[in-house]
Image 1 (cartoon, rainbow, N blue to C red):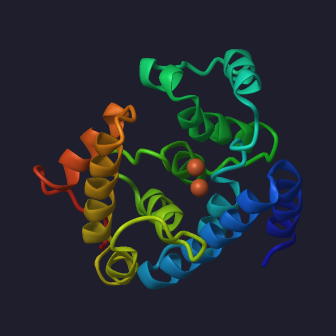
Image 2 (cartoon, rainbow, N blue to C red; image 1 turned 90 degrees about the horizontal axis):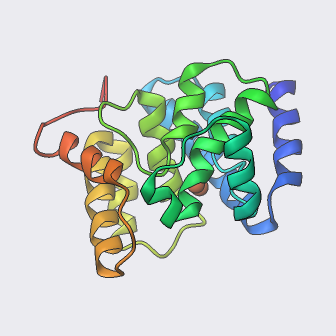
Length: 196
Ligand code: FE
Ligand code: FE
């Protein structure tokens, strides 16, 4: 582990509550394991995992204030479900406060909640690691999805997106159109994660 990664880890720990920090470590290590499996750079994946939820524990009023300050546009869906904002805002904080210049890492943070069509490998890895990390227990078919993620990343993503849409629909929770678009891209349009 590089000194830089150690620094990021220390700083992130202060920004998050205990539970969110545990989740963050779970995502970082799971992302590193997926990176080993699919030949992504392990340090990049670990860094993106550490930072993916860095904006999660900022309260909603402050999230909105920071979005305005950083010129981040807040969509209709995000206004109704402010937690969705933590991905965009997290990417902005990673860039400004953590001096991350790697576009791939920033996009992996930015799109980790909804995914997006034609995700890069590192985006797909963070999206997946967020769902399957060891601290998760609530999602259905987790055992199956965890195995799938390490055998066929595209298939894993399809199953995660399908289950997420089902879950949100069943609870009358707002669905970000990006989740549906991503689902359609990997199912109806037959999109695949590059190299997987
Ligand atoms: Fe998140
Ligand atoms: Fe997360």
